[in-house]
Length: 258
Image 1 (cartoon, helix red, strand yellow):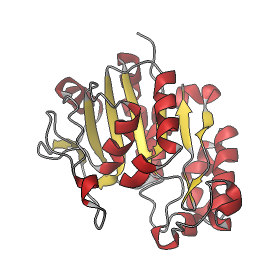
Image 2 (cartoon, helix red, strand yellow; image 1 turned 60 degrees about the vertical axis):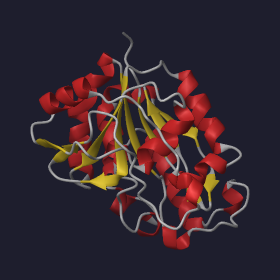
Image 3 (cartoon, rainbow, N blue to C red; image 1 turned 180 degrees about the vertical axis):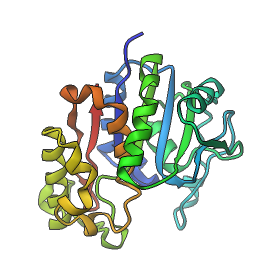
């Protein structure tokens, strides 16, 4: 069995499905990697300590958003549960607890609908027990053996995420229409990833330009550190621009290791 990559993706909001470009980019990406035996999701939208393991069977989705048209609340994604993967996570991370009623949130199912629309790959979501970059990086390192067992590890966030500065009229997704703070952070992130400067990424709050504007709260950047930890042995195969560009002014950069 070949080693699966570890990825970080910008997941968008439920209207991502209506974007003329982004769904196709996600679908193309998934077609380029081996089909996983299972998927382990770490979403910006679930923080719980100690590390929580979501439902190991198929339960209803978590529609953790408000004020959207009704049809976004009718989306389903009945992926099989992954109880064996849950057992492996428990064996790799010492302090965990189960939340069996907790279904996939939109940070998990919104991109998966585009990447694996048949919902035929078992999916397990785990929480972020902290937002501390180094602790998340260590969790990723602990989970890394799963990649040799056919598991696709996915950190799901947004490369820049400031909803108070969201700009629906920001243009066609090119840098020209994006605000300066989002462009500057995205450029720094791309360059720092390409140079494999993990220490700078872990200290992005002090090292990156416009860090506080790009991430007033850091939960959407935090899943990247799980991905980087899980993929630390494949830095030489890091792709920092699998998907790039902007959506309503936010950088949708997505990354692959391995």
